Length: 198
Length: 198
Image (cartoon, rainbow over all chains, first blue to last red):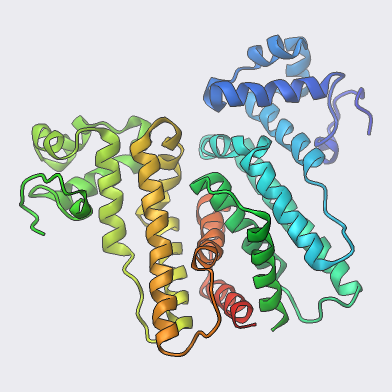
């Protein structure tokens, strides 16, 4: 995976592939989303702010939703690695805290505005599906490791667990804007772990 | 509380107070939200569709956000009573199912669009706070009854429980648009109850 490679039909790599200056482009997209909102963002504006030629932007991302989707894929890949602390509880608390920070103050705080446009744009709807799917995959990876370590015996519905972990975080960060403290994150995880062990 | 009373400074009654024809007005607001979105809705349009004089509408609700907020209060009061099935599990499953139906197919399906405008309007931000606060109050009412019946012994953080119940429902209904089946609602509640009892 090279940052200077040419556009590829292989969509598997699109989270990290991009032209020279990809970091500046994605930073410009996030800045403009914060100041102008999704509706006000234009590819011209991104070109101006990032100093990257408009033609280059269009060569990589044929539309505004494609560019915005690429920016979120990039931010998620950078800021939301799968925690691997050595314990199930540690991994889940770290996961909840990183998602809360991402959605509350990080690039994810712009997600609600972008997601409000999914109805009008299939590329954004795909992005939402993909990122939420990634979250479930990460939860399954964490419970898989816990099972290997013998920390988790019974069957766990990873999809339901994923929603039980992310749902309250989403509600606070995106809807009610109430902070989720470290103690809240621990209480949330402890309640779920006690429930899963029962 | 009379449906034909005159406007009152007492905001405590505003969920149900309204002019003659309130039901038709609120139905018109929901119809127009579904077809034109929040951005496209106008008080003139509501007057036309409901057959209620524009002056009457303005006398009760001085602005579009005030009218939309009143409609959601009305819909919530009508469609989301606090379940009282006689058991904690029954109450929580009923609560989760009614919220899922309200947010997935009922008037609440229009909430994401309206909430996308809370940043621009304090009346809508207040509405969101109020309805989410109401949800926590309902959860506390349910756990309070369960405690009286001796079904719940330990301390329960009602705010956290409220978010754990509503978060996954919200995520599926509003964000990922995945259905929450009866089995899902039961699994969700059973996981939380086992966790709380632990």
